[in-house]
Image 1 (cartoon, helix red, strand yellow):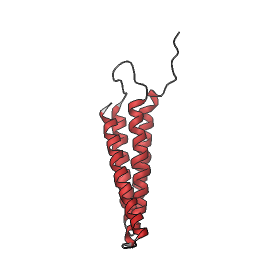
Image 2 (image 1 turned 45 degrees about the vertical axis):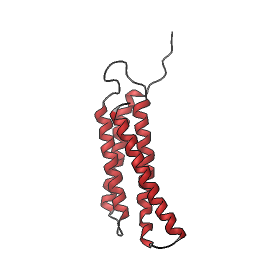
Image 3 (image 1 turned 120 degrees about the horizontal axis):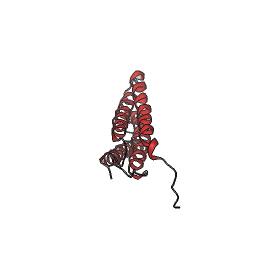
Image 4 (image 1 turned 60 degrees about the vertical axis):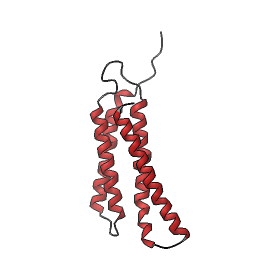
Length: 138
């Protein structure tokens, strides 16, 4: 498994843990209302679980499992995959921070979303050459 896949999957697991913790705190607060400000965790909870967990896990597994090249570099241009990793995580953290604040920073949220889009474009550029039809045996 390439190192970038390990980093993506482990980071996705961190986002899963943090996202579930935020969800558990909000659920606890729903049953026993103690801190109304906990509801501000809703948007970061969604951000961490949709983009941080789901998207990043899919990217990490795809980096590892897509067909490899027969000649080195077997996994293609990993610099694009690393760029997708850093861009996605920067975007997730910026968007989560922007929506967590009492007065949302819409400019920061826009930058976070743009970084997430850039991460998707980096990953498409990375994976495009590895997506190929199944070869047939003659």
